[in-house]
Amino acid sequence: MKALHSGRKLSVLLCGYYGEHNLGDDALLQVLVSQIPSDWDLLVTARDSDAVHALVPGVSTVNRRSLSDTIQALNRVDALVLGGGSLLQDGTSFKSLVYYLVLLWIARFKRLSILLWGQGLGPLQGRFSHFLVKQTLSGVSAVSWRDPGSMGLAQRWELDIPMVMGPDPVWRHPSPPWMGGNRLILCWRPTPLLDIKGWSVLLDAVDRFSSSGCAEVIWLAFHADQDASLWNELRSRDLIPERLCRRSLQMQAESLQQVQSLFSESALVIAMRLHALILAATAGCPTAALSYDPKVKAAAQLADLPWVDLNDALNADQLNQQWQSAMTAQPDGSQIEQLKHDAQLHETMLVGELQKLSV
Image 1: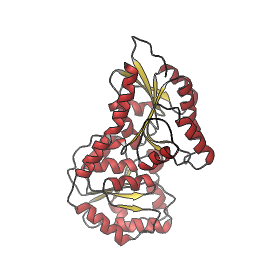
Image 2 (image 1 turned 45 degrees about the vertical axis):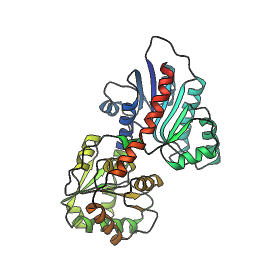
Image 3 (image 1 turned 60 degrees about the vertical axis):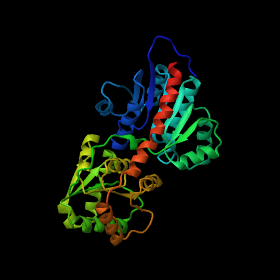
Image 4 (image 1 turned 180 degrees about the horizontal axis):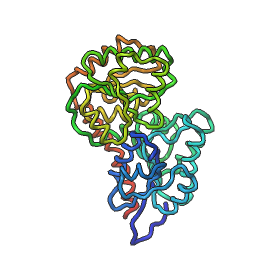
């Protein structure tokens, strides 16, 4: 562990997928920053520093797209926090995995305290990736995992480090209460799991569901760079029924406040995006999941929300029935409140480890 200099304020580098115009990672950053003790200075990795400053005014940033700049930032801090998401994975690319492993090894060399907060582990597709991550994790200070699968893999590796597991930290994000409304909100993303037939069945179900009481269908692009093109792609293939087209409105998610306001006045949110699902559920909004990834299914199951696995064949009648049930079900917030309580575990780990450096 790095030797501390008396008489100065300690600082921490928060490293994650921040400033990438993804509202889910924005929510993670806001929760993480709220949990850092006030006597610490913050440095945040960001692609778009203006986007991060809008979330955390006045915070210092470093270009996350520059490995050399981020490495240099390690010279200015006492601790490194990998904050939220699933950063140690090679599903996006092996290059992305190497980026984080290099940072972790250099932080180890500099004897910094290294904390993994609200992390998922994997997917790791290659044996070499497994080996590298296992060896790297042996040198971190403490970890809070966000799901049982990640915790289980780390336990099978027999890592001799403090580890805990709790629900995704975004369950701790404050949400306005659900007021009700007549809008259907779709937080969808492109996915290779759906071919033309799959999209056709899904869109037919939405058309039929929304025609029975929803004044408007909002296609809410939760990740600006990935989701905004979905409507145009489906429209160009002539997959969206004309009645649904007339009822639809495309919107770019520009802030968490905007998204939460929309959720609080909706009839139902149908989410593929994990953190759209969580943010809607924390508000008490009727919510259903379309799972393109096991993490979405797992979150829906934890919250006792209806879900459909996009790996399975879709049935428009069953979808319509599920969504009708979700919209009209008597709300029971006890499960959500339990998740909010359990997700506090990430903060307990983080604050405890940082306080060790402050004494």
